[in-house]
Length: 439
Image (cartoon, rainbow, N blue to C red; front, side, top):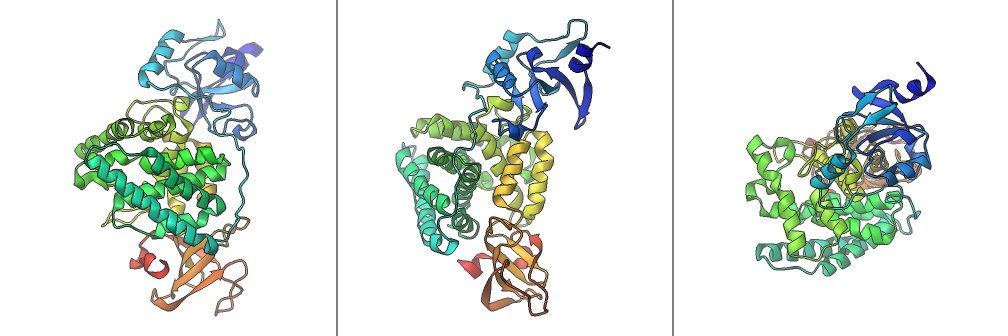
């Protein structure tokens, strides 16, 4: 076999999917690039996976790579190898038309979309930021209530007012994300749709902060998170807060309509930006084309929609049903990584895991003493040693006066052993309601 054949036609198996090694100069429109000849993080592409849709995509890749790997199954059309010609036959115009048929929106290059531009540092402690985070949370819940009332009456709502409120929440998260994340985890309005919307907004704001997105982009991301499931309000009441993991087939079909309802709401009843609309429309799409409603691929998706998909899946996993407990956060993060093959971005999943940490703010943990605690704040350089509030003894009996500790400086417990977290726990473990002990 000649050198060109060995470079161009090397067949490898990656995650049981057929992948071919291709010189960048030989890329064709319609190919799905799943890996590079260098780490993704050494390039401006923060999101892994590119669907080649134009010569510009190829020229951009030439700046960073010589060889890439193409996933045959995830390419838009069948990729036929022709060794004698050293080329892959793809009907380019058909591929372009296919992509256009999938979405009425423009496609997105990713080299600049999520490049880190800002490095944030905590300017306040959680204790000092908590009052401001509380006010921002309450204001967000209030504006969401107003939006919901307008939707019920089919009256247009002022998106600028919603954006102003999200901006306030954004500023709190920029100062210290742990305070707002604690509020989102432990404070409830009594209306699950509201609480889920605010949790999503907070998680996406924190995620964007972690990635170093500028303030303006964070504000868009936060508003998109607040509104992306707004279409659920037009579903039957029995379905509005039901988790998709436990839906029956007929319920699942009906649930999928919330995306269309959400698009109608944000386009007809508000002046939402294109980015917000795309988060509403695309947060159930997947990079391998197996999502809905349009079966889009890879960089046909807006980067914020890809982030929203991860947050949406994470919250689905950790929050259970009334009769069924959710997952431990550590198990949920592992599940996200396992689901990369089902269309989530590996790079973004890893970044999200770093953002929330193995012991997320507001989560329950069991200490090596057997006591139960709430995680209150992260230590940025020692994520396994957060600040905690011990709320129950080893027999799960609540303490009359919970004890707050910073595990970096806590010293030994009464048994003479240094305090440490033994494991994380799902929300509601042992019948414990963490909200009672903190907020």
